[in-house]
Image (cartoon, rainbow, N blue to C red):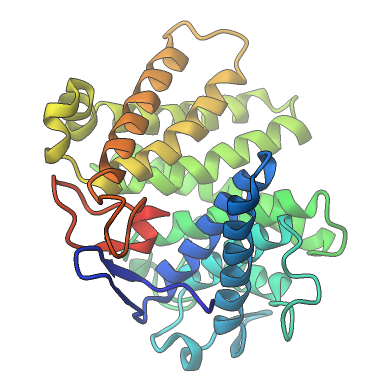
Length: 345
């Protein structure tokens, strides 16, 4: 029972909590997706026990951060008092994602001291956007600040905006109709900025991961709400698929993962796990097309299967008899000395 721990040392059987709020909350979100998967199956008694443990950990982990907030423009941000570090839009994003996952499972109904202020957290992120479409990581600052951790922070924020927008479609009162409209307007401006940044610069693969997830969600929403806007949908789709192609053409995926188990020890687990997340979203975009002349769906499916084979191999690096960490993922290599919860997630 209690909140999640962050680190695990399998050979020692030790677990350790650390102050890493963004990764903590990301792991909560991951846990809600794992719980959703388990609930959708016909689980046995042992798996029901695992579901109960996960449910309690999700609630208690959210509650650990759901205490202090500070005003930001017409919204709020998590406070430094609870984060023990300077707040930025990624903190707000991960809190929104964790809560959205929990709400999909009805885990927040009267189970917390207070429900996190989703609307105000969302407004806080929206307030950090500049007229050119970029996001300031720490809510306020100069235009030069938008480049700080551009591979991660803005993408995480945009995924949260789209997740809460999608959830509010079936959950009246979660956010206001004005905020729903503002999210879509914000995302359209963000698309122009971040796609332009990608095509004009030499970005690393880390940039692609969150961008794919954010704009695949935007593509899905626009397809339902504004199917007549074919030019914009085509632009977003092309951007998402170009990002996905970069992943499967990268060194780890193209020259090591594809060559089978003898190359597995050379791979970084987090690179493959995060790329897998994004490729699944990219595959959804490809499958929305009437035709697929470049056979992207087949290429993505092959790479997704390769990634799953590798991750299953990586799980087995921790023996079942280990005092801790069985079933989790290390960083890579043949032997696992340390696991991070967000890598497993």
